Length: 293
Ligand code: UTP
Image (tube, rainbow, N blue to C red; front, side, top):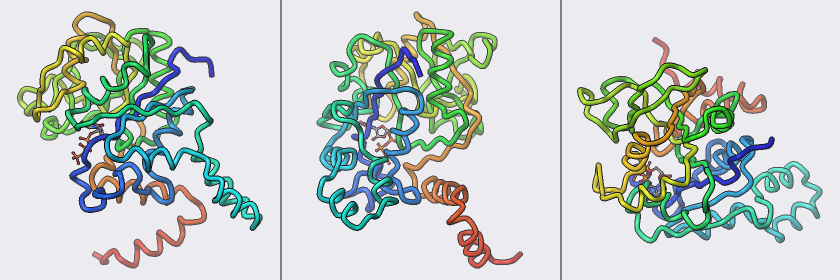
Protein backbone atom coordinates (compact mmCIF):
# COMPACT_ATOMS: atom_id res chain seq x y z
CA UNK A 1 0.00 0.00 0.00
CA UNK A 2 1.50 3.36 -0.99
CA UNK A 3 1.22 5.72 1.95
CA UNK A 4 2.50 9.06 3.08
CA UNK A 5 2.71 7.74 6.65
CA UNK A 6 5.77 5.53 6.96
CA UNK A 7 6.67 5.67 10.63
CA UNK A 8 4.81 4.69 13.78
CA UNK A 9 5.64 5.58 17.36
CA UNK A 10 4.64 3.03 20.01
CA UNK A 11 5.01 4.47 23.52
CA UNK A 12 5.52 1.68 26.04
CA UNK A 13 7.40 3.44 28.84
CA UNK A 14 4.50 3.79 31.30
CA UNK A 15 4.63 2.10 34.69
CA UNK A 16 1.55 -0.09 34.12
CA UNK A 17 0.38 0.35 37.70
CA UNK A 18 -3.09 -1.04 36.96
CA UNK A 19 -1.49 -4.35 36.11
CA UNK A 20 0.74 -4.84 39.15
CA UNK A 21 2.16 -7.20 40.19
CA UNK A 22 2.15 -8.80 36.69
CA UNK A 23 3.79 -5.69 35.20
CA UNK A 24 6.55 -5.48 37.81
CA UNK A 25 9.16 -7.50 35.90
CA UNK A 26 7.28 -8.10 32.62
CA UNK A 27 6.29 -5.05 30.57
CA UNK A 28 2.52 -4.67 30.46
CA UNK A 29 2.55 -4.78 26.65
CA UNK A 30 4.32 -8.14 26.72
CA UNK A 31 1.42 -9.79 28.55
CA UNK A 32 -0.36 -12.22 26.21
CA UNK A 33 -3.80 -11.95 24.69
CA UNK A 34 -4.35 -15.64 23.84
CA UNK A 35 -0.82 -16.44 22.63
CA UNK A 36 0.51 -13.12 21.34
CA UNK A 37 1.82 -10.22 23.41
CA UNK A 38 -0.28 -7.10 23.25
CA UNK A 39 2.48 -5.11 21.55
CA UNK A 40 2.46 -7.48 18.59
CA UNK A 41 -1.20 -6.74 17.87
CA UNK A 42 -0.30 -3.04 17.58
CA UNK A 43 2.68 -3.77 15.32
CA UNK A 44 0.49 -5.94 13.08
CA UNK A 45 -2.16 -3.21 12.92
CA UNK A 46 0.54 -0.72 11.95
CA UNK A 47 1.94 -3.07 9.31
CA UNK A 48 -1.52 -3.52 7.83
CA UNK A 49 -1.70 0.28 7.47
CA UNK A 50 1.53 0.35 5.45
CA UNK A 51 3.88 1.42 8.25
CA UNK A 52 7.52 0.60 7.45
CA UNK A 53 9.38 1.84 10.54
CA UNK A 54 8.48 1.10 14.15
CA UNK A 55 9.76 3.42 16.86
CA UNK A 56 9.33 2.05 20.38
CA UNK A 57 9.59 4.55 23.22
CA UNK A 58 10.74 2.44 26.12
CA UNK A 59 11.69 2.83 29.76
CA UNK A 60 13.34 0.13 31.78
CA UNK A 61 11.89 -2.65 29.58
CA UNK A 62 13.68 -2.00 26.31
CA UNK A 63 15.59 -5.33 26.18
CA UNK A 64 12.48 -7.52 26.46
CA UNK A 65 10.72 -5.70 23.65
CA UNK A 66 13.84 -5.73 21.45
CA UNK A 67 14.25 -9.48 22.02
CA UNK A 68 10.66 -10.15 21.06
CA UNK A 69 10.98 -8.52 17.64
CA UNK A 70 14.46 -9.86 16.79
CA UNK A 71 15.15 -13.20 15.16
CA UNK A 72 16.31 -15.74 17.76
CA UNK A 73 18.81 -18.02 16.00
CA UNK A 74 18.89 -20.67 18.74
CA UNK A 75 15.10 -20.98 18.86
CA UNK A 76 14.94 -21.00 15.06
CA UNK A 77 17.53 -23.80 14.82
CA UNK A 78 15.75 -25.83 17.53
CA UNK A 79 12.35 -25.63 15.80
CA UNK A 80 13.84 -26.21 12.33
CA UNK A 81 15.63 -29.37 13.55
CA UNK A 82 12.29 -30.69 14.85
CA UNK A 83 10.50 -29.76 11.64
CA UNK A 84 7.99 -27.74 13.69
CA UNK A 85 6.75 -25.49 10.91
CA UNK A 86 3.79 -24.15 12.89
CA UNK A 87 5.98 -22.84 15.71
CA UNK A 88 8.49 -21.53 13.18
CA UNK A 89 5.73 -19.51 11.50
CA UNK A 90 4.56 -18.21 14.90
CA UNK A 91 8.05 -16.99 15.84
CA UNK A 92 8.63 -15.55 12.37
CA UNK A 93 5.45 -13.47 12.70
CA UNK A 94 7.08 -11.60 15.59
CA UNK A 95 10.24 -10.64 13.71
CA UNK A 96 10.70 -7.13 12.37
CA UNK A 97 13.00 -6.86 9.34
CA UNK A 98 16.52 -5.59 10.12
CA UNK A 99 16.62 -1.81 10.28
CA UNK A 100 12.86 -1.32 10.69
CA UNK A 101 12.75 -1.15 14.50
CA UNK A 102 14.18 1.79 16.43
CA UNK A 103 14.21 2.56 20.13
CA UNK A 104 13.99 5.89 21.92
CA UNK A 105 14.49 6.03 25.66
CA UNK A 106 12.13 7.86 28.01
CA UNK A 107 14.16 8.07 31.19
CA UNK A 108 11.19 8.92 33.40
CA UNK A 109 7.49 8.37 32.72
CA UNK A 110 6.62 12.06 32.52
CA UNK A 111 3.52 11.48 30.44
CA UNK A 112 2.37 10.33 27.01
CA UNK A 113 3.19 13.70 25.42
CA UNK A 114 6.73 13.49 26.74
CA UNK A 115 7.05 9.89 25.47
CA UNK A 116 6.07 10.97 21.95
CA UNK A 117 8.46 13.94 22.20
CA UNK A 118 11.30 11.48 22.96
CA UNK A 119 10.84 10.03 19.45
CA UNK A 120 11.27 13.38 17.66
CA UNK A 121 14.72 12.74 16.15
CA UNK A 122 13.74 9.31 14.89
CA UNK A 123 10.52 10.65 13.34
CA UNK A 124 12.09 13.70 11.68
CA UNK A 125 10.04 16.04 9.53
CA UNK A 126 7.16 13.92 8.27
CA UNK A 127 3.65 12.94 9.38
CA UNK A 128 3.71 9.88 11.63
CA UNK A 129 1.39 7.49 13.42
CA UNK A 130 1.11 6.92 17.15
CA UNK A 131 -0.42 3.71 18.50
CA UNK A 132 -1.03 3.08 22.20
CA UNK A 133 -0.58 -0.67 22.34
CA UNK A 134 -2.61 -1.20 25.50
CA UNK A 135 -5.71 -0.22 23.52
CA UNK A 136 -6.43 -3.36 21.50
CA UNK A 137 -8.64 -2.45 18.55
CA UNK A 138 -10.26 -5.14 16.43
CA UNK A 139 -11.75 -3.73 13.28
CA UNK A 140 -12.20 -4.43 9.62
CA UNK A 141 -10.66 -2.30 8.21
CA UNK A 142 -8.13 -2.04 11.03
CA UNK A 143 -8.28 1.32 12.79
CA UNK A 144 -4.92 2.74 11.70
CA UNK A 145 -5.51 1.76 8.05
CA UNK A 146 -8.74 3.78 8.21
CA UNK A 147 -6.88 6.81 9.63
CA UNK A 148 -4.22 6.56 6.90
CA UNK A 149 -6.94 6.43 4.27
CA UNK A 150 -8.71 9.50 5.69
CA UNK A 151 -5.39 11.31 6.11
CA UNK A 152 -4.74 10.72 2.40
CA UNK A 153 -7.91 12.75 1.69
CA UNK A 154 -7.87 15.39 4.42
CA UNK A 155 -4.15 15.91 5.15
CA UNK A 156 -3.39 17.53 8.50
CA UNK A 157 -3.70 15.39 11.61
CA UNK A 158 -6.27 12.62 12.18
CA UNK A 159 -7.27 10.80 15.36
CA UNK A 160 -9.54 7.82 16.07
CA UNK A 161 -12.63 8.45 18.20
CA UNK A 162 -15.25 6.33 19.94
CA UNK A 163 -18.38 7.33 21.82
CA UNK A 164 -18.16 6.77 25.58
CA UNK A 165 -20.81 7.17 28.31
CA UNK A 166 -21.03 10.75 29.61
CA UNK A 167 -20.06 9.53 33.10
CA UNK A 168 -16.73 8.22 31.75
CA UNK A 169 -15.39 11.34 30.01
CA UNK A 170 -12.98 11.90 32.92
CA UNK A 171 -11.00 8.85 31.80
CA UNK A 172 -10.21 10.05 28.27
CA UNK A 173 -9.15 12.88 26.02
CA UNK A 174 -12.45 14.21 24.64
CA UNK A 175 -12.85 15.79 21.19
CA UNK A 176 -14.43 19.14 20.43
CA UNK A 177 -16.20 18.75 17.10
CA UNK A 178 -16.53 21.95 15.07
CA UNK A 179 -17.39 20.80 11.59
CA UNK A 180 -19.83 18.72 9.65
CA UNK A 181 -19.02 15.22 8.62
CA UNK A 182 -16.59 15.21 5.68
CA UNK A 183 -17.26 11.64 4.61
CA UNK A 184 -16.50 9.80 7.83
CA UNK A 185 -14.20 12.56 9.07
CA UNK A 186 -15.27 15.14 11.68
CA UNK A 187 -13.47 18.49 11.80
CA UNK A 188 -12.05 19.08 15.28
CA UNK A 189 -11.35 22.44 16.86
CA UNK A 190 -9.73 21.09 19.99
CA UNK A 191 -9.81 18.43 22.67
CA UNK A 192 -9.70 18.29 26.45
CA UNK A 193 -7.85 15.77 28.61
CA UNK A 194 -9.97 13.93 31.17
CA UNK A 195 -12.78 16.50 31.55
CA UNK A 196 -15.38 16.07 34.28
CA UNK A 197 -18.65 15.05 32.58
CA UNK A 198 -20.28 18.53 32.77
CA UNK A 199 -17.22 20.13 31.11
CA UNK A 200 -16.84 17.55 28.35
CA UNK A 201 -17.23 19.11 24.88
CA UNK A 202 -18.66 15.84 23.49
CA UNK A 203 -18.81 12.15 24.26
CA UNK A 204 -16.27 11.31 21.59
CA UNK A 205 -13.10 9.96 23.20
CA UNK A 206 -9.63 9.64 21.71
CA UNK A 207 -8.84 5.95 21.72
CA UNK A 208 -5.10 5.70 21.17
CA UNK A 209 -4.57 5.92 17.41
CA UNK A 210 -3.25 9.12 15.87
CA UNK A 211 -1.67 10.47 12.70
CA UNK A 212 0.16 13.64 13.57
CA UNK A 213 2.00 16.32 11.68
CA UNK A 214 5.60 16.76 12.88
CA UNK A 215 4.67 20.27 14.03
CA UNK A 216 3.29 18.58 17.15
CA UNK A 217 6.88 18.38 18.47
CA UNK A 218 7.05 22.18 18.63
CA UNK A 219 3.86 22.21 20.72
CA UNK A 220 5.13 19.37 22.89
CA UNK A 221 8.41 21.19 23.53
CA UNK A 222 6.40 24.08 24.98
CA UNK A 223 4.10 21.93 27.12
CA UNK A 224 3.96 22.16 30.88
CA UNK A 225 2.51 19.29 32.90
CA UNK A 226 -1.29 19.07 32.62
CA UNK A 227 -3.86 16.60 34.00
CA UNK A 228 -2.30 14.21 36.54
CA UNK A 229 0.95 16.24 36.54
CA UNK A 230 1.93 14.60 33.22
CA UNK A 231 2.95 16.16 29.90
CA UNK A 232 -0.18 15.39 27.93
CA UNK A 233 -0.29 14.68 24.22
CA UNK A 234 -3.89 15.90 24.26
CA UNK A 235 -2.85 19.40 25.37
CA UNK A 236 -0.34 19.75 22.50
CA UNK A 237 -2.91 18.44 20.00
CA UNK A 238 -5.54 20.82 21.39
CA UNK A 239 -3.25 23.80 20.72
CA UNK A 240 -2.42 22.49 17.27
CA UNK A 241 -6.09 21.87 16.37
CA UNK A 242 -6.79 25.59 16.79
CA UNK A 243 -4.31 26.45 14.04
CA UNK A 244 -4.17 23.48 11.67
CA UNK A 245 -6.41 20.94 9.99
CA UNK A 246 -7.41 18.29 12.49
CA UNK A 247 -9.93 15.51 11.95
CA UNK A 248 -11.48 12.73 13.94
CA UNK A 249 -12.70 9.40 12.59
CA UNK A 250 -15.23 7.25 14.45
CA UNK A 251 -13.94 3.74 14.99
CA UNK A 252 -16.71 1.20 14.61
CA UNK A 253 -14.85 -1.95 15.62
CA UNK A 254 -14.34 -3.47 19.05
CA UNK A 255 -12.07 -1.85 21.63
CA UNK A 256 -10.42 -3.34 24.69
CA UNK A 257 -8.49 -1.37 27.31
CA UNK A 258 -5.86 -4.02 27.98
CA UNK A 259 -4.10 -1.71 30.43
CA UNK A 260 -6.61 -3.01 32.97
CA UNK A 261 -7.17 -6.65 33.93
CA UNK A 262 -10.88 -6.59 32.96
CA UNK A 263 -10.11 -5.24 29.46
CA UNK A 264 -7.41 -7.86 29.01
CA UNK A 265 -9.73 -10.68 30.12
CA UNK A 266 -12.42 -9.53 27.70
CA UNK A 267 -9.88 -9.19 24.86
CA UNK A 268 -8.59 -12.70 25.51
CA UNK A 269 -12.08 -14.17 25.37
CA UNK A 270 -13.01 -12.15 22.25
CA UNK A 271 -9.82 -13.15 20.41
CA UNK A 272 -10.06 -16.81 21.49
CA UNK A 273 -13.67 -16.99 20.23
CA UNK A 274 -12.39 -16.08 16.78
CA UNK A 275 -9.98 -19.00 16.74
CA UNK A 276 -11.77 -22.12 15.40
CA UNK A 277 -9.45 -24.47 17.33
CA UNK A 278 -10.27 -22.75 20.66
CA UNK A 279 -13.85 -21.64 20.28
CA UNK A 280 -15.85 -24.77 21.17
CA UNK A 281 -13.78 -25.67 24.21
CA UNK A 282 -13.91 -22.09 25.47
CA UNK A 283 -17.70 -21.97 25.05
CA UNK A 284 -18.08 -25.20 27.04
CA UNK A 285 -15.84 -23.85 29.76
CA UNK A 286 -17.75 -20.54 29.93
CA UNK A 287 -21.05 -22.44 30.28
CA UNK A 288 -19.50 -24.55 33.03
CA UNK A 289 -18.36 -21.55 35.08
CA UNK A 290 -21.47 -19.44 34.46
CA UNK A 291 -24.09 -20.02 37.16
CA UNK A 292 -27.47 -20.77 35.57
CA UNK A 293 -30.01 -18.07 36.25
P1 UTP B 1 -1.32 4.57 30.27
O1 UTP B 1 -1.56 5.63 31.26
O2 UTP B 1 -2.48 3.77 29.80
O3 UTP B 1 -0.25 3.51 30.78
O4 UTP B 1 -0.55 5.19 29.04
P2 UTP B 1 0.54 3.40 32.11
O5 UTP B 1 0.90 4.72 32.66
O6 UTP B 1 1.66 2.46 31.81
O7 UTP B 1 -0.51 2.58 32.98
P3 UTP B 1 -1.13 2.82 34.44
O8 UTP B 1 -2.12 3.92 34.28
O9 UTP B 1 0.01 3.13 35.37
O10 UTP B 1 -1.75 1.50 34.73
C1 UTP B 1 -0.86 4.88 27.69
C2 UTP B 1 0.39 4.45 26.93
O11 UTP B 1 1.39 5.47 27.01
C3 UTP B 1 2.60 4.95 27.50
C4 UTP B 1 2.20 3.69 28.27
O12 UTP B 1 3.29 2.76 28.28
C5 UTP B 1 1.02 3.17 27.49
O13 UTP B 1 1.41 2.36 26.39
N1 UTP B 1 3.27 5.96 28.35
C6 UTP B 1 2.56 6.63 29.30
C7 UTP B 1 4.61 6.21 28.15
O14 UTP B 1 5.26 5.62 27.28
N2 UTP B 1 5.22 7.13 28.96
C8 UTP B 1 4.55 7.82 29.91
O15 UTP B 1 5.19 8.66 30.59
C9 UTP B 1 3.19 7.55 30.10
